[in-house]
Length: 317
Length: 303
View 1 (cartoon, chains in turn red, orange):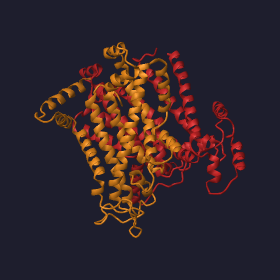
View 2 (view 1 turned 60 degrees about the vertical axis):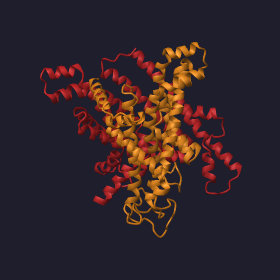
View 3 (view 1 turned 45 degrees about the horizontal axis):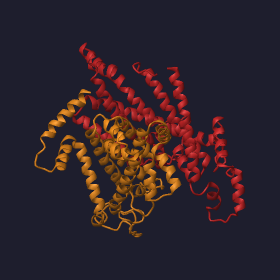
View 4 (view 1 turned 180 degrees about the vertical axis):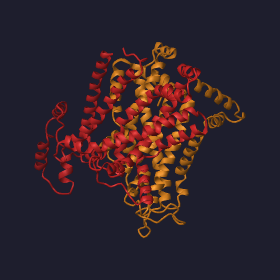
């Protein structure tokens, strides 16, 4: 087990290094660098010399490999450097937005779980009835609706029925928890509904599988209350694959946030990513992407390990 | 597993009641519709959408690009059924023409992405060893990006516009297809007919393309149909962010971009109808793809 964990941990390094190289090179082939964009975009004439000095100041005149090594070496020491656009430390720029995005992400996960587990179980128990079909249609609809459109609909709904829209300025949770919640919950619902679709289906199929197991039949045969059979024997085992799906999707939630934050005009990580790509902010984009990849790879790793712990039947070599 | 077995049996029983005397393909269609009513509904939506896209010139009441500055943000009514946008363009006509953009991007990106992915998967499985390792590592890297993040990065490199959006959407689909196809190709590599082909001294290319690729058609088709809805959704998202299809082309995501929040109160129809079109289209593709997966290969775990 220990050897497996170590091996599995070490395998993450080449993947992350690959991500770093990939995004680093991708940023450099984007036409027009940050210096040109910032100094000449207003149509002003700037001499080559000024451009060259500015590039030197940002370290863009150094050979590519050196820029890369500098960046990675910084990351390893947890020094993310400064944003090329604002000049402020990247850790600061990310820090002030992380709370908002993380809140939306966590709340969206809660919404997804609240939808997926009851609906998925219900669909499995009523397999092939209209309930099952309704749940399927509901979850496929979630996959089909763009989350930003759901966001627009929510805003329209709030506007028409309550003459109220969520405020644009973020209220931290410790200042006014209720104001914070009423602001965060709407984007969380928009993202969470979509997010629930895959987990609902997973919950349905894994419950179906578990219900056919011998131990469920035994539990029923010994006269246990059906409710106990479902909650204690079936659901507990059916949850495993669902946890995987929820975990993996959590790491990718930032993808959903990229568009949804735009609709609700929230200044979170998704918006920061779109901005920094548009501004050719190399260091910021690279670091953000690496952050997403690290989260994804780590979540994957943790799930793998958790699996063995939750399900004693699984053995690692 | 008992559940799926009984379901297959009943499905087969239903299938036997298909009227004979029809052409083979029509029988297959009837059988699919009987077995998977939801899938048939999905397919119907897709067919309607294709017809609308083909007949856009005849169906659309107005020119989708015609601006009318004296008729901006008209509410839905007798003249403009779904109202007009901030340029006074007819929303219904733009939705009808928008189906062309959605289908073009959806189909091209999915076919492109799934095909490249399938070739990568087969190559990876066939050669094995170092080639397999390298391809798998590259795919792992690509898989560590959320779909839209990768697509955005590619669009940033290539620029906006329909062709570039197609490529940007295809790229994140490649590793997903490659992984699934590789899994089936690994089994095919060990079959006697591939061994025979090798013993005959056929070239690698010939074995891969003539003997292995045709046998991974099932997972390929499954991934392809699963991508179609995703691709349309991604195109809408990119266009919504202003990084996809550009004005004045009629595209659904783009229509929502202008409509979004600023005009929510004055012209809610601008925000409702294009989104409805996207959802209906993707819903159709998803329903159809889902059922196709059940029919083509019930044992395959492609999700």
